[in-house]
Image 1 (cartoon, rainbow, N blue to C red):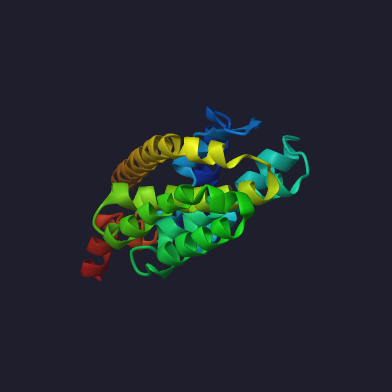
Image 2: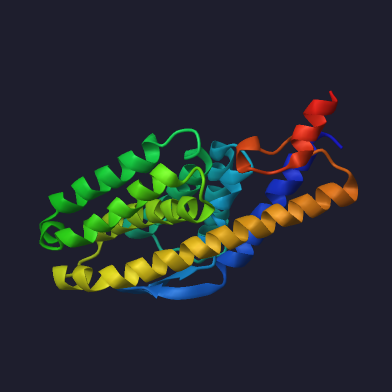
Length: 235
């Protein structure tokens, strides 16, 4: 089967699973009870571990548009528009961090600067120090899937928090109170991302073995596939 067809099938499967996960809520966004986190947090970043990061980002954006606009689950506001961005940042990070750590360091630094520039943000200065975590995770992400996943979910957290700060009114005390919640929440999300990645990896491995497919259409940096390397050796 042509590689482009295989890639198309993979993206179709990935987008379908993402839409399914999008509709399973995990918990509410504090300060915006009409908004919630879903299991999309688990699957959103991992596509970039299998295909080119930009292709994964476009796919994720497509999923978000379908879910929020075509399914009439979207009310226009700056905050809701900004909510498209966190998962795109997480997915891009997940795809590039093994080869290029600049994004994983630059975004947290920029996020801290923007947070502290806001009057409420400077009062809740300790909240932004959470973003030292993804910087440390980025340094070791190449060898540890959980840290790679932790870095990815914190990229989403940085973008989402800064957007929230500048669009939704919430007192500094609430930001301080959220610090332990964020630590637990992001650890759970990182575990979910890791499990989802390994599960999808295993499914693709099973398909490759059953159908005798060469999965060379997938990104080798996604750590997938002895099949790709075996194929190259045989050639």
